[in-house]
Every structure is written in C-alpha cells, then in structure tokens.
Image 1: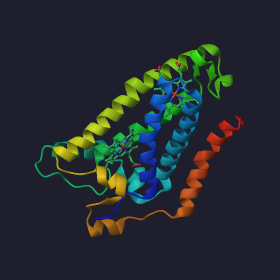
Image 2: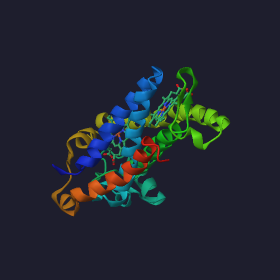
Image 3: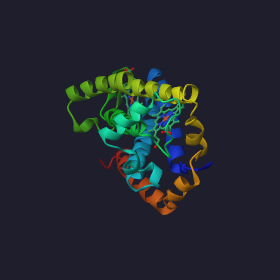
Image 4: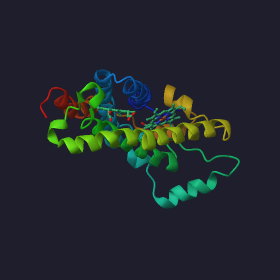
Length: 218
Ligand code: HEM
Ligand code: HEM
C-alpha cells in the first residue's frame, strides 16, 4: 500500500459529499442562509479542485487521468475480463466521470448565485446583474439541474464504485478516504506530491471570487 490521493483531494471529496447533502436538505427546508453559505463553500471547493487538477499532485492532475477515445474504448473492452486492469489513479472512464461531476457541481453552484426563492423572499447575491425574467428561469434551471443532472451523475458514480467493490472485487472507496492504495512501489515512486505553498495559492485563487461575491465587491 502506498500513498496515492493527497489530503486536498480527500478533503475536497468529503466536502462534496457533505455539501451536497446539506444543499439538498436546506433547499427542502427553505433554509436559504445555510443553503447560500454551503453553496459558497462548494463553489470554492470545486474551483480549488479544478486548479489542483492543473497544478496539484500528479494523480490529481487532469493531464494524468484524461485519455483520448481510443484509450477509453480499450479500457471499456477490458471490463469484461475476469481480472481487472489495475490503474494507479482514476481509470480512463472514471477520469472523464470526474470532469463531468466537477462541471455539474460548478454549474449548480454558479446558477444558485442568480436564483431566487419567492417563498421566503430570498435573492441570490448576483441577481442584480440580470433581469427578473432571467432570475426566474435560472431558478427553475438550478432545481432541474440538481434533480436531472447532478443527482443522476451521483447515483451513477456511487453505483459504479459499489460495482467495482462487489463485482470486480476492487476497493476504490478506502483509498479516497485514507489516501493509500494497492499500487506498486514503481508506480508510487513516479508520483510527485505538490508542496503546501501550492495548495495555499490554489486555495486563495479559488476563494477570491467567492469572497468578492460574499463581500458584495461584485
Ligand atoms: C452546489 C451547490 C448547490 C446545490 C447542490 C444546490 C441545490 C439546490 C436544490 C436541490 C434546490 C431545490 C430545487 C427545487 O426543489 O426546486 C435549490 C434551490 C435553490 N438554491 Fe441551490 N444549490 C446550490 C448552491 C446554491 C447557491 C450558491 C445559491 C445562492 C447563493 C443557491 C440558491 C438557491 C435558491 C434561491 C433556490 C430556490 C429556487 C426556487 O425556489 O426555485 N443555491 N438548490
Ligand atoms: C455526493 C456527492 C459526490 C460527489 C460530488 C463526488 C465526486 C467525486 C469526484 C469529483 C471525484 C474525483 C476525486 C478527485 O480526483 O478529486 C470522486 C472520486 C471518488 N468518489 Fe466520489 N463523489 C460523491 C460521493 C461519493 C460517495 C458516496 C462515494 C462512496 C461510495 C464515493 C466514492 C468515490 C471514489 C471511490 C472515488 C475514487 C474513484 C477512483 O479511484 O477513480 N463518492 N468523487
């Protein structure tokens, strides 16, 4: 067992799970203040994870796990094999699923900024930038996006991880919690973990636009 997922990847993942649960519950309860700040947290985390995908530790980088169509098709063909091909990181299909989920969370949080909730007279922080008609449409889109896109991706994501666990006997879940995965020593030696200063830089760049929204600079 060697370290594969660094702390920023694992904490971001945990925050996605907690944040999406909180977003769903607070939306049902019309608890818009908590919904709003929880949304800001998720927006910061997703922006951070995108930056970390460009400059972070090598297994977290998009360049290390996004493969072309030929590699994706070749991987899908191997799925029927009794012994699964082992990947030191996201496999070619999982890699694209990661991008889809990050984009889905980004769209969800961004549209929330332009939404309103007429039941409790709540206005999103950027509503002043668009017309009332657009706010109305974006609010509907924000709800529909959650139920039809984000939730579907999450159900597929969790099912895929459970299928790997139960049918393929490959445990991907423990590594995303502990960081340690059954990769070879040679694979582990190739990993370059990003330094703490780079984490701080990515975090501040991600938090800056969100802080600008919270403090009404925008
Ligand atoms: C990724 C983060 C977010 C998630 C997962 C999320 C999820 C949801 C869900 C499930 C609903 C209920 C939709 C319905 O039942 O029709 C909702 C409603 C709403 N959300 Fe979010 N939301 C997020 C971020 C935000 C943010 C950042 C804001 C504003 C600052 C926001 C503002 C609203 C408003 C105003 C509504 C009410 C819309 C309506 O009544 O039609 N959301 N959100
Ligand atoms: C609720 C919302 C969830 C969201 C938005 C989400 C999103 C993500 C994202 C973006 C990644 C990529 C991690 C990275 O490279 O930073 C990921 C990986 C992963 N997630 Fe989730 N996740 C959610 C829930 C769950 C749950 C409940 C489980 C447990 C069954 C889970 C298990 C995993 C595993 C095992 C991986 C690593 C897969 C691999 O090794 O390639 N996720 N998830």
